Amino acid sequence: MLKVTVWNENRHEQKNPIVRDIYPTGIHGAIAQFLESEGIETRTATLDEPEHGLTDEVLAATDVLVWWGHLAHGEVKDEIVQKVQQRVLAGMGLIVLHSGHFSKIFKTLMGTSCDLKWREADEKERLWVVSPSHPITEGISEYIELEKEEMYGEHFDIPKPDELIFTSWFEGGEVFRSGITYTRGNGKVFYFRPGHETYPTYHNEQIQRVIINAVKWAAPVKRERPVYGNAKPLEQIQGGQK
Image (tube, rainbow, N blue to C red):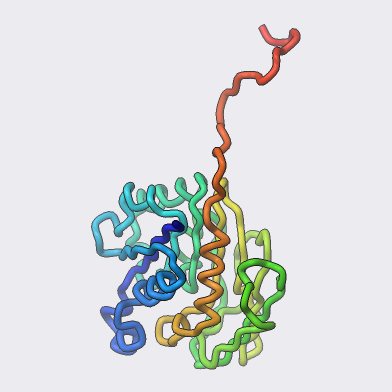
């Protein structure tokens, strides 16, 4: 069975009653609930737990890690980021949501600033499917419309994505690459833009479907991992090596 860990810094829920009312069990709890309803074995982890809830045992038992952070990116310990990075390189999937674009783990994997334009103005977002044959878009119509969301706008300072899945348009006129994929080592990475904490975005069934699809897509491939380093020849070498 696919095993997923949903990580959330869980700070807005403690500080902001609006967020607490929208997500009474936390953003992590809301995401875990709809993943579990899909039959996916799910656990949660938060910033203030020992080792941020991402112990060696948890990471070793995680096929896909879902990441949401905003207020406290700087509080995530570098050694935990390094462990997560190594797990992604070894094959663990990573789903980075909304303001997680500025997380240490996403910036580490991207190697760029990951900066962008933003605005909170209760504006409409329309996420257009630009890769309709991709498995992450299964069950999604031509676009997803959100009545109110935070705006993210280009230029998004990221490496060229392997695949562009969604492009967003906002009521104020901006556009944004809002669903993108990468491979890093043996692992798959999906960044998905929607999910500002003061809007009920993760209660939207189409947003839930995208995340469910993405988790399944990012699952590790069941095969022997490549071996790195000095290698013995597969065939006998005729001369040239002394």
